[in-house]
Image 1 (cartoon, rainbow, N blue to C red):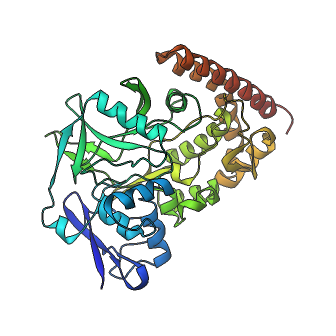
Image 2: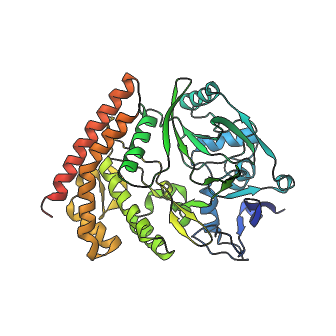
Image 3: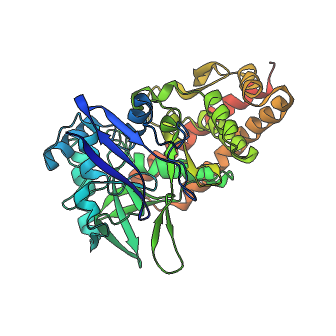
Length: 414
């Protein structure tokens, strides 16, 4: 028997996802006026999307974490290995604008509600995620999905209060306790993201917050847009694994050149392409190892494709550990310590052409000079306890030393 989920964008049905024989997925998104395409990986059509591409798109909506999938499966009594089954129970509020709704949910499309939660409630939830990798990301009556491997949950912010979103209600903020085992990592992620913002790059707004003493980075969702009448619309987006039909497990295989070619093919602005190139170099200079394809997204409208604000930026320096590689190679090199001026020049030529090599090199030099001060400013903005201050100081010192080494090779002989 075929099982079906209806694909709905802000109340409008735009396609369907079927589970057919043997658990295969069949995704159909017919052409519709005034509707953004579902993915850059496939065009709207009345024919089913190639199954490999459909699978990559759907997998990109779900958690990467096997622990998170098992917890969802246990909570809702479905199979952890069946993406259709998982999406059938957590598809009411997904990354991007599309909800995946069963016939039963479609019969009452607006069902849901907002439940106020205290800072103590949020703190308990953060504490549980921090202490136990098997802890479910979702609470009772929640049916949202978030991609990625890091523990997190999502809430609604309204009238200066926090709410749990039940049913199909959209959420507005993502709360992350930080990577387990890395001291004050949520703080470091916020400061890293803020550093990019100080450098003039578009980023998702973030805050470092304490809830009942529990620290977290809280990131505003760029795929949720408030309207003048107080409503909340879902804006469509997809990450660059979905856009390139890459399964999440192969997220490090997407190259910077792949991304620039994709953005160029689909008419993204020159400014967006420069922002992406700049962000790859900035990830190297700040010592951030996780700038892979799932940590970049595009916003899709009926008339436009745009690079989404940057997110999930976090330096790995400051922990006394070995963080040797960037996610996307620079001129064929990934190891931080081995990237040289000629790698940056090759990177620029491959992505933008020989005419812009000097401009990109100068861009890298200016960022290497600016990042230490920007990082210091970002650190100074955040009130922290002595342990947090010590971690910030270690990280600031290591980021500064790394930028000094990079500046030496960028301004030295080719």
